[in-house]
Amino acid sequence: MLHGKRILLIISGGIAAYKSLDLIRRLRERGAAVRCVLTESATEFVTPLSVSALSEDKVYGNLFSLTDEAEMGHIQLSRDADLVVVAPATTNIMAKMAQGIGDNLATTVLLATDKDVVVAPAMNVRMWEHAATRDNIATLKARGIRFAGPTEGAMACGEFGEGRMIEPLEIVAEIENYFSASAPLSGRRAIVTSGPTHEAIDPVRYIANRSSGKQGHAIAATLAGLGAETVLVTGPTEQADPAGVEILRIESARDMYDACMTALPADIAVCAAAVADWRPAAEDDRKIKKAKGAPPPSLEMVENPDILQALSAAGNQRPGLVIGFAAETDNVIENAIAKRARKACDWIVANDVSPATGTFGGDTNTVHLITAVGAEDWPAMAKTDVAARLAERIAAHYAPTTEAAE
Image (cartoon, rainbow, N blue to C red; front, side, top):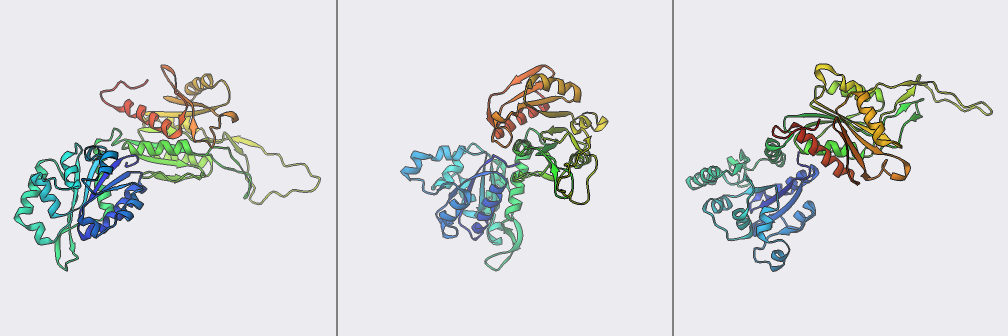
Protein backbone atom coordinates (compact mmCIF):
# COMPACT_ATOMS: atom_id res chain seq x y z
CA MET A 1 0.00 0.00 0.00
CA LEU A 2 2.83 2.44 0.78
CA HIS A 3 5.20 1.33 -1.96
CA GLY A 4 6.42 4.44 -3.79
CA LYS A 5 4.43 6.86 -1.61
CA ARG A 6 6.19 10.07 -0.54
CA ILE A 7 5.69 11.02 3.09
CA LEU A 8 6.76 14.37 4.51
CA LEU A 9 7.27 13.75 8.24
CA ILE A 10 7.36 16.77 10.54
CA ILE A 11 8.88 15.98 13.93
CA SER A 12 8.14 18.48 16.69
CA GLY A 13 9.75 18.74 20.10
CA GLY A 14 8.40 16.28 22.63
CA ILE A 15 9.67 13.20 24.40
CA ALA A 16 7.61 11.05 21.99
CA ALA A 17 9.95 12.20 19.21
CA TYR A 18 12.03 9.10 19.89
CA LYS A 19 9.18 7.06 18.38
CA SER A 20 9.56 8.98 15.13
CA LEU A 21 12.76 7.06 14.43
CA ASP A 22 10.89 3.76 14.49
CA LEU A 23 8.09 5.33 12.44
CA ILE A 24 10.59 6.25 9.72
CA ARG A 25 11.97 2.71 9.73
CA ARG A 26 8.50 1.16 9.49
CA LEU A 27 7.51 3.43 6.60
CA ARG A 28 10.75 2.76 4.74
CA GLU A 29 10.45 -1.02 5.08
CA ARG A 30 7.05 -0.73 3.40
CA GLY A 31 8.56 1.02 0.42
CA ALA A 32 7.64 4.62 1.28
CA ALA A 33 10.03 7.52 0.70
CA VAL A 34 10.29 9.64 3.86
CA ARG A 35 11.56 13.22 3.93
CA CYS A 36 11.79 14.86 7.34
CA VAL A 37 11.50 18.36 8.81
CA LEU A 38 12.64 18.87 12.41
CA THR A 39 11.67 21.80 14.58
CA GLU A 40 14.45 23.33 16.65
CA SER A 41 13.07 21.78 19.83
CA ALA A 42 12.83 18.35 18.15
CA THR A 43 16.63 18.31 17.84
CA GLU A 44 16.78 18.22 21.64
CA PHE A 45 15.21 14.73 21.49
CA VAL A 46 16.44 13.21 18.20
CA THR A 47 19.41 14.20 16.08
CA PRO A 48 19.29 15.16 12.40
CA LEU A 49 21.99 12.54 11.79
CA SER A 50 19.89 9.66 13.12
CA VAL A 51 16.82 10.88 11.21
CA SER A 52 18.85 11.22 8.01
CA ALA A 53 20.40 7.78 8.41
CA LEU A 54 16.99 6.11 8.75
CA SER A 55 15.19 8.14 6.08
CA GLU A 56 18.17 8.00 3.68
CA ASP A 57 17.43 11.61 2.77
CA LYS A 58 18.47 15.10 3.77
CA VAL A 59 16.83 16.51 6.90
CA TYR A 60 15.41 20.03 6.83
CA GLY A 61 15.09 22.41 9.75
CA ASN A 62 16.12 26.00 9.01
CA LEU A 63 13.59 28.24 7.27
CA PHE A 64 16.31 30.75 6.40
CA SER A 65 18.93 28.36 5.02
CA LEU A 66 19.98 29.76 1.65
CA THR A 67 21.31 26.35 0.65
CA ASP A 68 18.02 24.64 1.42
CA GLU A 69 16.02 27.31 -0.38
CA ALA A 70 18.24 26.93 -3.44
CA GLU A 71 17.94 23.15 -3.46
CA MET A 72 14.43 22.59 -2.08
CA GLY A 73 12.43 25.70 -1.25
CA HIS A 74 9.84 25.46 1.51
CA ILE A 75 7.02 25.78 -1.03
CA GLN A 76 8.29 22.83 -3.05
CA LEU A 77 9.08 20.91 0.12
CA SER A 78 5.50 21.39 1.27
CA ARG A 79 4.03 20.07 -1.95
CA ASP A 80 6.49 17.43 -3.11
CA ALA A 81 4.77 14.71 -1.08
CA ASP A 82 1.69 12.53 -1.18
CA LEU A 83 0.90 13.10 2.49
CA VAL A 84 2.18 15.27 5.36
CA VAL A 85 2.44 13.62 8.79
CA VAL A 86 3.18 15.47 12.05
CA ALA A 87 4.46 13.01 14.65
CA PRO A 88 4.71 13.85 17.41
CA ALA A 89 2.29 16.76 17.20
CA THR A 90 2.76 18.82 20.35
CA THR A 91 0.15 21.20 21.72
CA ASN A 92 2.41 24.06 20.60
CA ILE A 93 2.57 23.07 16.91
CA MET A 94 -1.17 22.29 16.83
CA ALA A 95 -1.88 25.74 18.30
CA LYS A 96 0.25 27.35 15.60
CA MET A 97 -1.51 25.30 12.92
CA ALA A 98 -4.91 26.41 14.22
CA GLN A 99 -3.88 30.07 14.35
CA GLY A 100 -2.06 30.06 11.02
CA ILE A 101 1.33 30.96 12.49
CA GLY A 102 4.37 30.26 10.33
CA ASP A 103 7.39 31.18 12.41
CA ASN A 104 9.64 28.24 11.49
CA LEU A 105 10.13 25.83 8.61
CA ALA A 106 7.71 23.22 9.96
CA THR A 107 4.79 25.62 10.45
CA THR A 108 5.52 27.41 7.17
CA VAL A 109 5.46 24.10 5.34
CA LEU A 110 2.11 23.28 6.97
CA LEU A 111 0.70 26.61 5.80
CA ALA A 112 2.02 26.17 2.26
CA THR A 113 1.10 22.54 1.66
CA ASP A 114 -1.70 21.55 -0.69
CA LYS A 115 -1.67 17.96 0.58
CA ASP A 116 -3.67 16.29 3.34
CA VAL A 117 -2.18 16.37 6.83
CA VAL A 118 -2.25 13.68 9.53
CA VAL A 119 -1.28 14.64 13.08
CA ALA A 120 -0.33 12.23 15.87
CA PRO A 121 -0.79 14.25 19.08
CA ALA A 122 1.54 13.76 22.04
CA MET A 123 1.23 15.77 25.23
CA ASN A 124 0.45 15.70 28.93
CA VAL A 125 -3.12 14.74 29.80
CA ARG A 126 -3.79 18.20 31.31
CA MET A 127 -2.59 19.90 28.13
CA TRP A 128 -4.76 17.58 26.02
CA GLU A 129 -7.82 18.39 28.13
CA HIS A 130 -7.19 22.17 28.25
CA ALA A 131 -9.95 24.29 26.71
CA ALA A 132 -7.51 26.01 24.34
CA THR A 133 -6.30 22.66 23.02
CA ARG A 134 -9.87 21.41 22.61
CA ASP A 135 -10.73 24.54 20.61
CA ASN A 136 -7.65 24.10 18.43
CA ILE A 137 -8.52 20.44 17.79
CA ALA A 138 -12.04 21.40 16.73
CA THR A 139 -10.63 24.06 14.39
CA LEU A 140 -8.14 21.68 12.81
CA LYS A 141 -10.73 18.93 12.33
CA ALA A 142 -13.09 21.43 10.72
CA ARG A 143 -10.32 22.22 8.24
CA GLY A 144 -9.90 18.56 7.32
CA ILE A 145 -6.81 17.76 9.41
CA ARG A 146 -6.80 14.04 10.23
CA PHE A 147 -6.01 12.81 13.73
CA ALA A 148 -4.19 9.57 14.54
CA GLY A 149 -4.67 9.15 18.28
CA PRO A 150 -3.81 10.01 20.93
CA THR A 151 -4.35 7.13 23.28
CA GLU A 152 -4.49 6.66 27.03
CA GLY A 153 -1.44 5.52 28.93
CA ALA A 154 1.50 6.25 31.21
CA MET A 155 3.45 9.41 30.35
CA ALA A 156 7.03 10.53 30.79
CA CYS A 157 5.88 13.07 33.40
CA GLY A 158 4.58 10.23 35.57
CA GLU A 159 0.88 10.94 34.99
CA PHE A 160 -1.62 8.63 33.33
CA GLY A 161 -4.34 9.58 30.89
CA GLU A 162 -5.20 10.53 27.34
CA GLY A 163 -2.58 12.37 25.33
CA ARG A 164 0.00 9.64 24.78
CA MET A 165 1.11 9.30 21.14
CA ILE A 166 0.00 6.06 19.51
CA GLU A 167 2.67 3.54 18.55
CA PRO A 168 4.53 3.80 15.22
CA LEU A 169 2.81 0.77 13.69
CA GLU A 170 -0.56 2.27 14.58
CA ILE A 171 0.43 5.48 12.79
CA VAL A 172 1.52 3.38 9.80
CA ALA A 173 -1.90 1.71 9.80
CA GLU A 174 -3.60 5.13 9.77
CA ILE A 175 -1.42 6.18 6.82
CA GLU A 176 -2.22 2.94 4.98
CA ASN A 177 -5.92 3.49 5.60
CA TYR A 178 -5.62 6.99 4.17
CA PHE A 179 -4.10 5.74 0.93
CA SER A 180 -6.33 2.70 0.65
CA ALA A 181 -9.47 4.86 0.72
CA SER A 182 -8.49 6.56 -2.54
CA ALA A 183 -6.44 3.79 -4.14
CA PRO A 184 -7.75 2.75 -7.58
CA LEU A 185 -7.72 -0.97 -6.73
CA SER A 186 -8.99 -0.64 -3.18
CA GLY A 187 -11.43 -3.44 -2.42
CA ARG A 188 -10.00 -5.67 -5.17
CA ARG A 189 -8.18 -8.95 -4.55
CA ALA A 190 -5.28 -10.05 -6.75
CA ILE A 191 -3.35 -13.30 -7.14
CA VAL A 192 0.12 -13.04 -8.68
CA THR A 193 2.41 -15.97 -9.48
CA SER A 194 6.15 -15.47 -9.69
CA GLY A 195 9.47 -17.24 -10.09
CA PRO A 196 10.25 -20.78 -11.28
CA THR A 197 8.95 -24.10 -10.08
CA HIS A 198 11.19 -26.98 -9.02
CA GLU A 199 10.13 -30.45 -10.15
CA ALA A 200 11.82 -33.08 -8.02
CA ILE A 201 13.71 -36.00 -9.54
CA ASP A 202 14.98 -37.33 -6.23
CA PRO A 203 15.70 -35.72 -2.82
CA VAL A 204 18.67 -33.73 -4.19
CA ARG A 205 17.90 -33.11 -7.87
CA TYR A 206 15.17 -31.22 -9.66
CA ILE A 207 14.18 -29.74 -13.01
CA ALA A 208 13.80 -25.95 -13.10
CA ASN A 209 14.28 -22.89 -15.31
CA ARG A 210 16.09 -19.55 -15.22
CA SER A 211 13.26 -17.35 -13.95
CA SER A 212 14.41 -14.88 -11.28
CA GLY A 213 10.96 -13.78 -10.09
CA LYS A 214 11.83 -10.10 -10.55
CA GLN A 215 8.90 -9.36 -12.83
CA GLY A 216 6.27 -11.20 -10.82
CA HIS A 217 7.43 -9.71 -7.51
CA ALA A 218 7.40 -6.22 -9.03
CA ILE A 219 3.82 -6.73 -10.25
CA ALA A 220 2.67 -7.92 -6.82
CA ALA A 221 4.29 -4.91 -5.13
CA THR A 222 2.72 -2.46 -7.58
CA LEU A 223 -0.78 -3.95 -7.32
CA ALA A 224 -0.54 -3.75 -3.53
CA GLY A 225 0.59 -0.15 -3.89
CA LEU A 226 -2.60 0.58 -5.83
CA GLY A 227 -4.70 -0.79 -2.99
CA ALA A 228 -5.32 -4.38 -4.05
CA GLU A 229 -5.31 -7.11 -1.42
CA THR A 230 -2.50 -9.08 -3.04
CA VAL A 231 -1.47 -12.70 -2.67
CA LEU A 232 1.91 -13.61 -4.16
CA VAL A 233 2.37 -17.31 -4.93
CA THR A 234 6.08 -17.67 -5.51
CA GLY A 235 8.47 -20.41 -6.40
CA PRO A 236 12.03 -20.42 -5.04
CA THR A 237 13.66 -17.02 -5.70
CA GLU A 238 16.17 -14.67 -4.11
CA GLN A 239 13.77 -11.72 -4.34
CA ALA A 240 12.79 -9.81 -1.22
CA ASP A 241 9.18 -10.15 -0.13
CA PRO A 242 7.15 -7.15 -1.34
CA ALA A 243 5.76 -5.10 1.54
CA GLY A 244 2.07 -5.40 2.27
CA VAL A 245 1.68 -8.62 0.29
CA GLU A 246 0.60 -12.06 1.51
CA ILE A 247 3.33 -14.53 0.53
CA LEU A 248 2.63 -18.18 -0.30
CA ARG A 249 5.87 -20.06 -0.99
CA ILE A 250 5.74 -23.19 -3.11
CA GLU A 251 8.16 -25.60 -4.80
CA SER A 252 6.39 -27.44 -7.59
CA ALA A 253 3.80 -26.63 -10.25
CA ARG A 254 1.28 -28.75 -8.37
CA ASP A 255 1.97 -26.75 -5.21
CA MET A 256 1.43 -23.52 -7.15
CA TYR A 257 -1.80 -24.83 -8.66
CA ASP A 258 -3.16 -25.77 -5.23
CA ALA A 259 -2.14 -22.41 -3.73
CA CYS A 260 -3.80 -20.44 -6.54
CA MET A 261 -7.03 -22.41 -6.35
CA THR A 262 -7.10 -21.99 -2.58
CA ALA A 263 -6.54 -18.22 -2.92
CA LEU A 264 -9.73 -17.83 -4.97
CA PRO A 265 -12.00 -15.92 -5.23
CA ALA A 266 -10.12 -12.97 -6.67
CA ASP A 267 -10.77 -10.08 -9.03
CA ILE A 268 -7.37 -10.23 -10.72
CA ALA A 269 -4.97 -13.05 -11.55
CA VAL A 270 -1.57 -12.36 -13.06
CA CYS A 271 0.33 -15.54 -13.94
CA ALA A 272 3.89 -14.27 -14.30
CA ALA A 273 5.60 -17.42 -12.99
CA ALA A 274 7.62 -19.62 -15.31
CA VAL A 275 5.84 -22.87 -14.47
CA ALA A 276 7.43 -26.12 -15.60
CA ASP A 277 5.30 -27.75 -18.28
CA TRP A 278 6.38 -31.27 -17.29
CA ARG A 279 7.61 -33.15 -14.23
CA PRO A 280 9.10 -36.59 -13.69
CA ALA A 281 6.34 -39.18 -13.51
CA ALA A 282 7.88 -40.61 -10.34
CA GLU A 283 10.09 -39.05 -7.68
CA ASP A 284 12.71 -41.34 -6.17
CA ASP A 285 12.73 -41.26 -2.39
CA ARG A 286 16.49 -41.91 -2.44
CA LYS A 287 19.27 -40.24 -4.36
CA ILE A 288 19.75 -41.92 -7.73
CA LYS A 289 23.29 -43.32 -7.69
CA LYS A 290 25.69 -43.26 -10.60
CA ALA A 291 27.15 -46.63 -11.51
CA LYS A 292 30.39 -46.84 -13.47
CA GLY A 293 29.71 -47.86 -17.04
CA ALA A 294 25.95 -47.86 -16.59
CA PRO A 295 23.82 -45.65 -18.88
CA PRO A 296 22.28 -42.51 -17.37
CA PRO A 297 18.78 -42.97 -16.02
CA SER A 298 15.89 -42.11 -18.27
CA LEU A 299 13.07 -39.95 -16.99
CA GLU A 300 9.47 -40.53 -17.88
CA MET A 301 7.75 -37.14 -17.94
CA VAL A 302 4.11 -36.21 -17.34
CA GLU A 303 2.33 -32.91 -17.89
CA ASN A 304 1.85 -30.47 -15.02
CA PRO A 305 -1.51 -28.84 -14.30
CA ASP A 306 -2.13 -25.70 -16.39
CA ILE A 307 -2.62 -22.95 -13.81
CA LEU A 308 -3.48 -20.16 -16.26
CA GLN A 309 -6.08 -22.28 -18.03
CA ALA A 310 -7.52 -23.47 -14.72
CA LEU A 311 -7.97 -19.89 -13.47
CA SER A 312 -9.61 -18.95 -16.77
CA ALA A 313 -12.05 -21.83 -16.37
CA ALA A 314 -12.77 -21.42 -12.67
CA GLY A 315 -16.50 -20.95 -13.17
CA ASN A 316 -18.17 -18.59 -10.73
CA GLN A 317 -14.82 -18.12 -8.99
CA ARG A 318 -13.07 -17.02 -12.18
CA PRO A 319 -11.24 -13.72 -11.64
CA GLY A 320 -12.73 -10.86 -13.63
CA LEU A 321 -9.35 -10.28 -15.27
CA VAL A 322 -7.01 -13.21 -15.96
CA ILE A 323 -3.59 -12.26 -17.34
CA GLY A 324 -0.97 -14.73 -18.52
CA PHE A 325 2.65 -14.35 -19.57
CA ALA A 326 4.13 -15.87 -22.71
CA ALA A 327 7.89 -16.31 -22.60
CA GLU A 328 8.91 -16.98 -26.18
CA THR A 329 12.14 -17.28 -28.16
CA ASP A 330 10.63 -16.87 -31.63
CA ASN A 331 7.41 -15.66 -33.27
CA VAL A 332 6.67 -13.90 -30.00
CA ILE A 333 3.44 -12.10 -30.89
CA GLU A 334 2.00 -14.91 -33.02
CA ASN A 335 2.61 -17.49 -30.33
CA ALA A 336 1.18 -15.19 -27.64
CA ILE A 337 -2.02 -14.57 -29.62
CA ALA A 338 -2.47 -18.31 -30.03
CA LYS A 339 -1.78 -18.88 -26.32
CA ARG A 340 -4.40 -16.32 -25.30
CA ALA A 341 -7.04 -18.12 -27.37
CA ARG A 342 -5.92 -21.54 -26.15
CA LYS A 343 -5.92 -20.61 -22.47
CA ALA A 344 -9.13 -18.53 -22.66
CA CYS A 345 -7.51 -15.76 -20.61
CA ASP A 346 -8.19 -12.04 -21.04
CA TRP A 347 -4.71 -10.64 -21.65
CA ILE A 348 -1.29 -12.06 -22.41
CA VAL A 349 1.96 -10.26 -21.69
CA ALA A 350 4.42 -11.60 -24.26
CA ASN A 351 8.17 -11.23 -24.05
CA ASP A 352 11.25 -12.51 -25.85
CA VAL A 353 13.42 -14.59 -23.54
CA SER A 354 16.09 -15.52 -26.05
CA PRO A 355 19.53 -15.65 -24.40
CA ALA A 356 20.63 -12.48 -26.18
CA THR A 357 17.83 -10.43 -24.56
CA GLY A 358 19.00 -11.02 -20.99
CA THR A 359 15.37 -11.06 -19.83
CA PHE A 360 15.69 -14.09 -17.54
CA GLY A 361 17.54 -12.83 -14.48
CA GLY A 362 17.89 -9.30 -15.87
CA ASP A 363 16.36 -6.03 -14.72
CA THR A 364 14.76 -4.98 -18.02
CA ASN A 365 12.04 -6.39 -20.21
CA THR A 366 10.46 -5.70 -23.59
CA VAL A 367 6.87 -6.86 -23.71
CA HIS A 368 3.79 -6.84 -25.91
CA LEU A 369 0.32 -6.66 -24.36
CA ILE A 370 -2.06 -8.97 -26.21
CA THR A 371 -5.79 -8.31 -25.78
CA ALA A 372 -8.90 -9.09 -27.80
CA VAL A 373 -8.30 -5.98 -29.90
CA GLY A 374 -4.73 -6.88 -30.88
CA ALA A 375 -1.12 -6.46 -29.84
CA GLU A 376 0.28 -3.37 -28.14
CA ASP A 377 4.07 -2.99 -28.29
CA TRP A 378 5.72 -1.51 -25.22
CA PRO A 379 9.27 -0.10 -25.33
CA ALA A 380 12.13 -1.71 -23.44
CA MET A 381 11.95 -0.66 -19.81
CA ALA A 382 12.86 -1.74 -16.30
CA LYS A 383 10.78 -4.62 -14.95
CA THR A 384 9.50 -2.31 -12.22
CA ASP A 385 8.25 0.06 -14.93
CA VAL A 386 6.60 -2.84 -16.79
CA ALA A 387 4.86 -3.71 -13.53
CA ALA A 388 3.71 -0.12 -13.02
CA ARG A 389 2.37 0.16 -16.56
CA LEU A 390 0.55 -3.15 -16.35
CA ALA A 391 -0.95 -2.21 -12.97
CA GLU A 392 -2.16 1.08 -14.44
CA ARG A 393 -3.88 -0.83 -17.24
CA ILE A 394 -5.49 -3.14 -14.69
CA ALA A 395 -6.70 -0.15 -12.67
CA ALA A 396 -8.09 1.42 -15.86
CA HIS A 397 -9.93 -1.83 -16.59
CA TYR A 398 -11.76 -1.52 -13.28
CA ALA A 399 -12.17 2.27 -13.28
CA PRO A 400 -15.92 3.07 -13.51
CA THR A 401 -15.40 6.00 -15.88
CA THR A 402 -12.71 4.43 -18.03
CA GLU A 403 -13.36 2.23 -21.01
CA ALA A 404 -11.71 -1.05 -20.15
CA ALA A 405 -9.40 -2.96 -22.47
CA GLU A 406 -11.18 -5.84 -24.11
